Image (cartoon, rainbow, N blue to C red; front, side, top):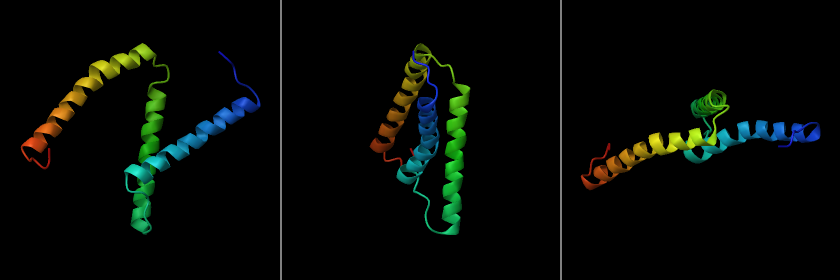
Length: 101
């Protein structure tokens, strides 16, 4: 393990701060329709930005010391069954032409 100090610590913290801004902007632009040009769409874009910031900070602060085995257990035993349910519901919606499913 290397302990950072001085310039390297400053660069690492700067990269972390830039990622806290760049990642939400990329997510909003690519997946959530962007910011738009009108005053209402610009306000909605900033609302999306604040929502993503709150979610990122919430996840970062509630799981600071999550070990790999805890994360793998969560993904295998919680997320995998939810994934299978979601795929099954999507398949049933396509087969039976249920638009909302």
